[in-house]
Length: 231
Ligand SMILES: NC(=O)c1ccc[n+]([C@@H]2O[C@H](COP(=O)([O-])OP(=O)(O)OC[C@H]3O[C@@H](n4cnc5c(N)ncnc54)[C@H](OP(=O)(O)O)[C@@H]3O)[C@@H](O)[C@H]2O)c1
Image 1 (cartoon, rainbow, N blue to C red):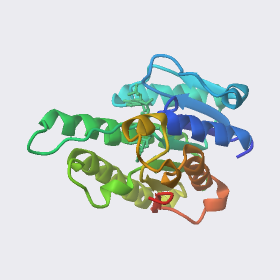
Image 2: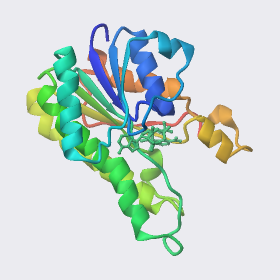
Image 3: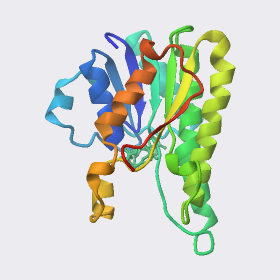
């Protein structure tokens, strides 16, 4: 990853920070893009690394995504890889839920990745560029209350497959990781009685995402890779 320029969407969140920290530790220059207005507190390690933070970027808006990636390319002269980490979750049953939540999750989980990918493709180097999406293992078969979330992440899985096929001729790879429950502060607060040791840590997941971005994974495209810890 040395001297590569990578962009992480949702870069201020739990997983986004871990992806940025791991890529930076391997020598990459990291651009963290997020809708949040200012960077949340970073760990000491992360603060020491070469990060650029771009707050207040709503990737649901195509023009915003296009201008964001154009300015990253103008600053660094290259973009080597994109991790589409931005996304969100809601639990609600179909009977008691609302249609707006389906639109909300489609927007957060599909539109953000679609717009960011479209914006980065013109800047990625042929035969080297890579995109890694963050899908969900829970979208392979939806449990109760997971309809809107699983439908949106299924959409992201199909987007991953379509982009992988479309970009094969130019050697840009597109893959997705499918986590189960990530060991984040939010999940610990929501499920205090769970066995946290079974969950995949952000750092473990980040290592897989950075591997998929790297040249070591140059034979892998179109993969939907479950990364579930021991869940
Ligand atoms: N946590 C889990 O157990 C789990 C399991 C499976 C898959 N995933 C997926 O893994 C990814 C990261 O999860 P996480 O737990 O690290 O989530 P997180 O901490 O909430 O981080 C996601 C980040 O994306 C940002 N974001 C949302 N909409 C955006 C937009 N329109 N433009 C730019 N940024 C936007 C969020 O900002 P705001 O907070 O301001 O909205 C947030 O900072 C998500 O795609 C999630 O669906 C998570």
